[in-house]
Length: 463
Image 1 (cartoon, rainbow, N blue to C red):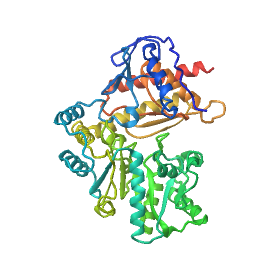
Image 2: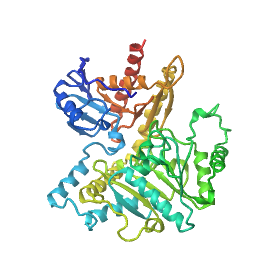
Image 3: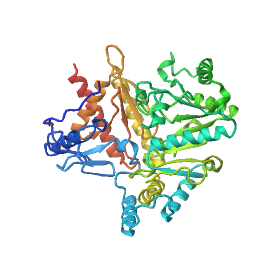
Image 4: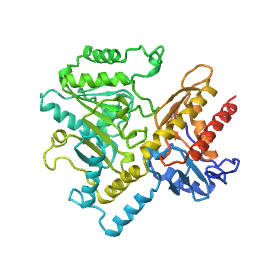
């Protein structure tokens, strides 16, 4: 059963620093009506986050109406890479609203052309065209369609899609099937026989993960042979879709595993899609996470930090692949609308002008050095640290059994909230950290000190 955060206000010690303010009980009593109204009128599937009622968010801080202020280590699940309410984005939205062009469906508008030109210009050369949508899950569905359409230009039976068990590709029907989780997709009532799943190459499945002699390429071939033994014909594979890192823990793949996958795809005429929705646009210290693997994918799914604010996603690829659908056969009512495109263009300009990709790599070194020190300090509680750049996953374990400890992770998130720090609560044994790339060094260090303090106090509370 998932941990449920209490909505009963708790008296906590006041906090007043340069970057944090806590002056009420938490959750703030004055905000309870909002929480209760949501509980009454909204599906509970939307609930489960920390009981903070956001009033405004600016740069790397979040505020409620009571004057409480948090350092944000969530970027609203990696959307606000360029900072909350980035001034460029705000100005672009205000200009668009004042111009009185809010929606065009698929009719053309100038901002759409400007945004697409900028997007393609800043991405590697193999990405020549884009298809815009509203949500990340739409992008993954679109990628599956394009891979299968490409496969059928080679053979009518080339329909197979291979993904990884446990990956997060969205919540629509096709995206749920990609996860390879029978429990989460049970509502669908059937399984797509042309979707296949590889086990994720978790580091703990190797006796000595840090043994550089371990043959990850061989491991990939063995995993593929296991699918073949179940009846998969390699010639019928249309493509692979790879979540650039496993979302719940910021767990990257072994580089040699992905290189072997890329070699296999080339040999068998398969496409490779990288799902960069949670990781793109500087989060890892590179423009895209796939660049850490030294491979060249055919398609990218983009979202979240693509606009830094409004609903906008995309699939990008070569002209050959992106132009497979006929005129008018793929569209989405709200995608490519003027407001989202204006936000997207301003966001890309902000990332570029602020040198935020380089800053993410630099600050990421600070982040991971501090986290490695915490792992050593709390060796009986922290099992793994994952991630790159300003992205980290911290996995917790039970000190007696060594088993994953989701309850402890949830308590750390709750206590950190009470101290003025917002962390990504996954509901599992992991906590994810991903502040806006604009966060000052001093604020990053303060947030990490709070994280350290919170772990120590949670350990004491559980004794």
